Length: 408
Image 1 (tube, rainbow, N blue to C red):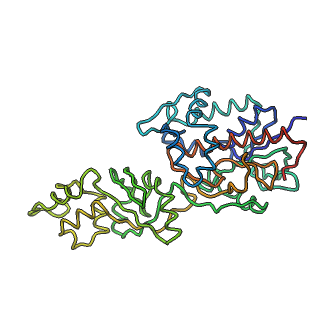
Image 2 (cartoon, one colour):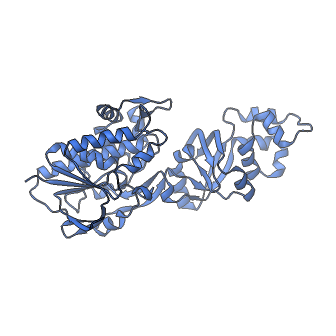
Image 3 (cartoon, rainbow, N blue to C red):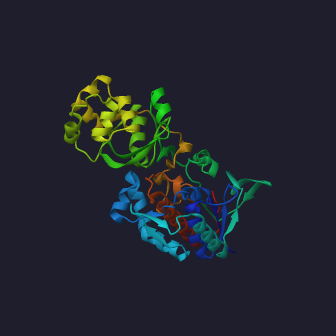
């Protein structure tokens, strides 16, 4: 009798698990709560689908922080080069952007997803949309469907249910309670690659909501990087903020706030700023003097007004120092559902080397529901795919060594 692997979750991790498992002569069924598969994958591609990164592999591995040692074996089995080769096999060539990030030619996610689903369909994978997993009922998987509650039996199960961000796309974290009730250790889900709240004054909030901050450098502890982000009425968001978000979030959780430091003129030294700001301004206003001498205007000037004492504007030394080292207090991460991704999840200690839950034989985990995080830049999708492949291989291998086992 053909054995069955049920995969719950139709994102990159679940689909990659299905691709691998279907090559092992087993029946593969993919269940997802949404009306169609890969919805978060499609959203990730709205501005250009960033599949992976072209930087040297050893540097690539450092992007996974404290969980590098747990993810490295998976990523060595499915490297960024393997991601590009996989896309090419689907008929989607890739290219390396100026930042080193890797994109499909055409930049869109939908052609890649269509080709992927077609390949899976041709491999015999069956898709079951609008099936929300509720947990286990004895030895069966329990789903809420348009036709009512359904019980499904499987020889092995792969959970690829995503994290806790973008609930409207299916990643609502509802699985945490179910998995914890089965005795599995789960680290609380937290926002990752997220924005932060700041206590702006009403005037600043009204005037600069939505304004971009370009060509600035952010320092927070050992983190230092140049880039850009956006001021919002709540606080700050955007690529440079996301890059430091894990460190900022953890500092806020530990101490109630975090103070980042901005360099508003990274192309100028403090000495250069001091020399220019010390020039007589005559009848010019301070706003005009800042713009004419050092190019500080708009939202950058607004930030100085927000955090520099009025009397310090008359002191060129203090003003130059503030431009190079402006402290910005951040008071809270934005809500989990607004984050690009989430940290936390099923702990690696609860899993064996093949991503099977130790106290639930035949049940595997993959993707963002595992306890890891990474910055944007292709690292998230690559690790989701790599863990999906590992879980798919692990489930198929486990079945080959088992007789008929229940899923619990």
